[in-house]
Image (cartoon, rainbow, N blue to C red):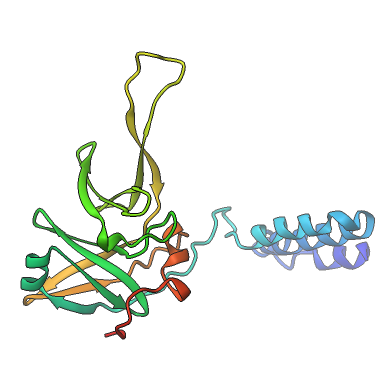
Length: 211
């Protein structure tokens, strides 16, 4: 088997040398480990899969983004009066807020436990407007979808609680206005967001059909 791999690894030119070794070396590693340490082979295969998903320069390839078309969800006059509205956009439920002259859209269900964010109150925390989930009072920034919480140093009795971010927890979508109509474009960012779990399926709360 080793002789066979040696023959395969003979480069036809200097230009193909990095490509041949970059592709065949991980496969050779899997075969050798599987032969001698069979119970470790699954771990090596996982490493190999990651290796093969990288470019030759060592950078990981970006996951493919899914592009969504904009969907009209209502009129600007209506949302300015109610200051919020719900909609189904490409089978995903979202809530749109109008707060202090700005539009914000996010998944309708809270990332924590699926609470109905369209029923929550908007409050400012640390100078940032947040929607407060009516179920467990989780605080989510309207602009970025970050989860906020207060932290204190237990070793310092005189320390005051400070606001900290958990990172982006709620998926945020884009709102645009054209000729008095409100349009929502779903996020195409490929990263996994906690609110994705409650965005579709059995947790859907809006019964209207997609536009």
